[in-house]
Amino acid sequence: MAFEGLSERLENSFKKLRAKGKLTEADVKEAMREVRLALLEADVNYKVSKEFTKKVTERAIGADVMESLTPGQMVIKIVNEELTELMGGNEARLAIANHPPTVVMMCGLQGSGKTTHSAKLALKLKKEGHRPLLVACDVYRPAAIKQLQVVGEQVGVPVFEMGTEDPVIIAQEAVKFAKDHGNDYVFLDTAGRLHVDEALMTELTNIRSTVHPHEILLVIDAMTGQDAVNVAKSFNETLGIDGVILTKLDGDTRGGAALSVRAVTGKPIKFVGTGEKLDNLETFHPSRMASRILGMGDVLSFIEKAELALDEKKAAELEAKLAKNKFDLNDLLDQFEQIERMGSIKDTIKLIPGIGKQIKDEDIDEKAFDRFRAIIYSMTKEERAKPEIINPSRKRRIAAGCGMKVEDVNKLLAQFKQMQKMMKQIGGNKGPKMSKKMRRMMAQNPEMAEKMMGNIKGSNPFGL
Image (cartoon, rainbow, N blue to C red):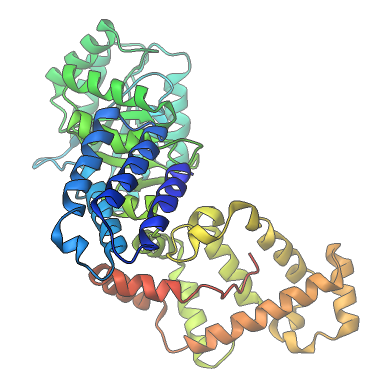
């Protein structure tokens, strides 16, 4: 995941500050020197790194920090606030036209992920109740139109294409089509090049001046580091972009582009691609990203993931069972499925304050659910509903049926009992309603939210 190296470097720098009861100006400057080196190693723009540490230093050597009972924590708080400001401060929303459709022009270099992320964004809006339309304006790259049709079919969004016609005409006709067919968002998947050139910019400028898009989004690859920032600067100076979609933020990238784009271009990052699946697209929240970078977790993103994965019908059924103190292995299977819908277990755990930064990737077994599922499927219906009847002979039969050991069956049953106790404790909570209530509460009081999520530490019912 992006920022891992930066997070580790910053954590080591802040450990030294926390260890000191009182800070001197020299302590702060030494820490900021290490922070600047960490930012540079993360491929953050040199000028951005220098200006960032200068701001933090000026604030950190103030009387409020030096005389604080916890000066180390105060410095970290300042770093958090300045990181948030560096990445834009507030969430930047997608434009909405006064008179639909809203035309969104997707641009970027070849291979940056424009086509895939056009579909991802269309899917996101479709889930919110909109009726998007994808438009094939890349008439040069082999199979570009077909690729858009394939991803469009996968997300259930119609694709408008006119073969190898002039992209400007295609864009014009697509907007007319959208008006006639009630599509409220139009995504123009434009052509890219291997590098910024005059022909590319001329075509994009012609499309812009003809259809007057309400939003121009630049798709850039986070893996390319400072090159991504240079591309963003070039596109913005020539075309005038409104925002950025940063792709491959889940990859082995140092993350410098995310910290530099806003400062260099003045344009916000609006969305980030966090995986290869078409639903792996997140709205970019500067404050949440800053918390992740500093190893503080991200409570609100964790809850949003949980809400999206929540099957309200099954949640209602589970609620009824919990009210009667009934929670069996069939319910455990349902919980496994809902957790898996949240995405990678490794990435999800890192969102939890107090836990994520203490659990290493190698300590997380992504295949644990598969093994547990195989064990449960080897049981009879009666055994799943009444786990207490599973005696030693039944355990041997179940283990043989799934190709595992009796010890594995014992491990699952022990963890099920722990999960059963947890479920009894929350039996009075309302499934989806409780989730929304928790989200509002945590949004209003992040510090209390971190304490609540931190209480999960040490409680590991899935054995991950």
